[in-house]
Length: 219
Image (cartoon, rainbow, N blue to C red; front, side, top):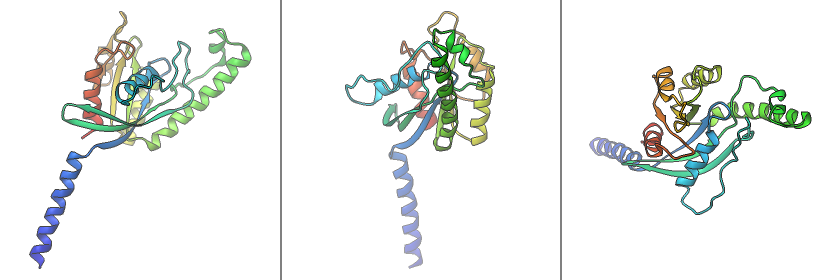
């Protein structure tokens, strides 16, 4: 009798391992980064590539003005396949993170004082919402502008926060299509984390990006 129970226990363990091996892993992944790094452009590209329908409606709108995304946008159950890896993701496009939001900066973009103050208030609320989302995430895609200095307070703070929470992290150097881009500076700044350089707007290196996503957040 004991031998039968022992064999049954081994069988159940093998069955459980095989089930996890061949099943898809479902994760909720947040796309984070400073304003205007290209987070929403990347989110829209991911959704367009993997949602499996002909709906061209984007996940979020984009603008050259900072903090265009002021509410987190979530798209459920995107099946991403890369080689022999499969991962089912909920993608969350979060508002841009900033250490300072000044309504005067929006006035410089042509907004009235009233519009600028509303925008600044919404942007501040968006930053708070983005931070709260960290409680519900299984991993983070951190998008940086490869034309900018990576050693910013936002980037360093976000990475430190991810490390403290032990969340899987993929660093993405966006805008490599621009002549002033220097993605290697980002790679060298944070060598402890997986890295990929892309152009979300041009679709450059997206196959390699999906390989990295499947490897970092899938089985």
